[in-house]
Length: 113
Ligand code: 5GP
Ligand code: ZN
Image (cartoon, rainbow, N blue to C red; front, side, top):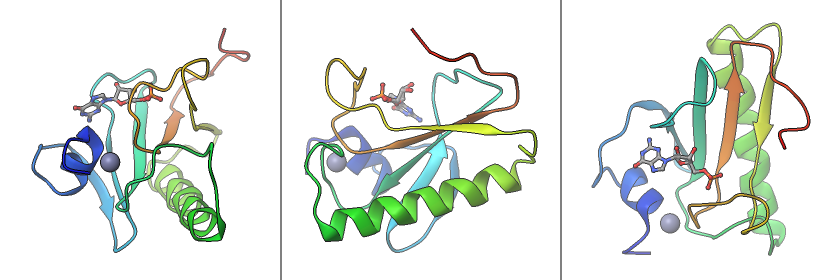
């Protein structure tokens, strides 16, 4: 999608602090971190959210989780971390390109409110 912020970040039209990249996903640091470590893993293929899933998207989201887990290990988040996929307006989603948050580096409260 030509007008999507995260498509532009994945295409490097907009700069970001890259963490990891492969053929399927791009991972980068959140511009407004909510924890000492706050990364985002996004699919290179645009789809808006996990509201509408199919087998292809499920495979991609599974890969996002695997990459997120490896990033957490690389970041030394051995005491734990949180993965979040905000979905839709009530879910607090502000960018309509599916993304996985990886948060860690301090004790995180639950529920988030
Ligand atoms: P959401 O609220 O949709 O779950 O998450 C969107 C996230 O993207 C937010 O945590 C926000 O800080 C981050 N974000 C928004 N714009 C940019 C940007 O231009 N660059 C980076 N690195 N992160 C962004
Ligand atoms: Zn997009």
